[in-house]
Length: 228
Image 1 (cartoon, one colour):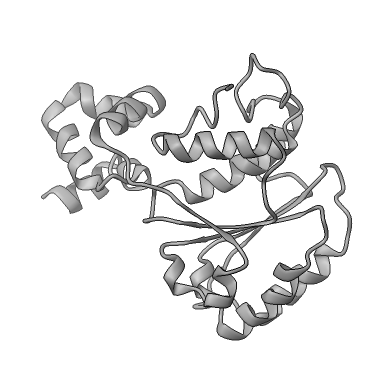
Image 2 (spheres, rainbow, N blue to C red):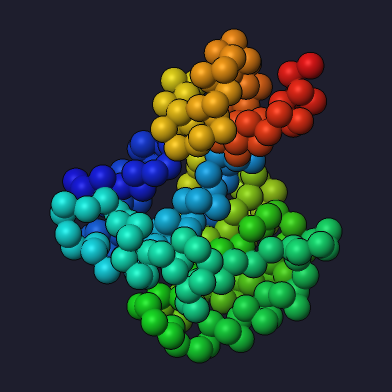
């Protein structure tokens, strides 16, 4: 099988499963991606969207997504007309009006890609009214629509929502994988490792297996606050 989500650390079984489902056209219309903060939920959702639209999907010599074709670049930079990221903005919850606006948008066919993707961040902050309204679309969405709901725990969502989606789980990253990924992909982390290996080991331990937390700890101010 071709390399899948090659730029993401860890979660090898999940990456293999998703790659197989995408290439064999078995991806369902709605997923709930649960996991601790910083374990890659948003990154996974964006890369699944990119993989679905990837212009080099059939090229066995390139990873999935290829990350370089125009469709991949647009999606990963947040500039694709058929990929929408929905969040709570500055509000405490995500209300029913947001869901109704999204529902109206699902009736409009994709502009460029075969699918329209909706990534709902902090899905556990959907109000009960919003979740109940969402059920109407989850039950019978247009064939071209895909939903990705992101939350820390599926248990925080209504059972009626959970029964209509496939739940995926992102795992914490082990220290060896974390060190290799940070060293290869992040200049600030490499600088910490080269300048002070002991402090770098403390950074890895303090990250709790979260890439997001590890990246934040490459900031000296943030690192002092946590490690001091």
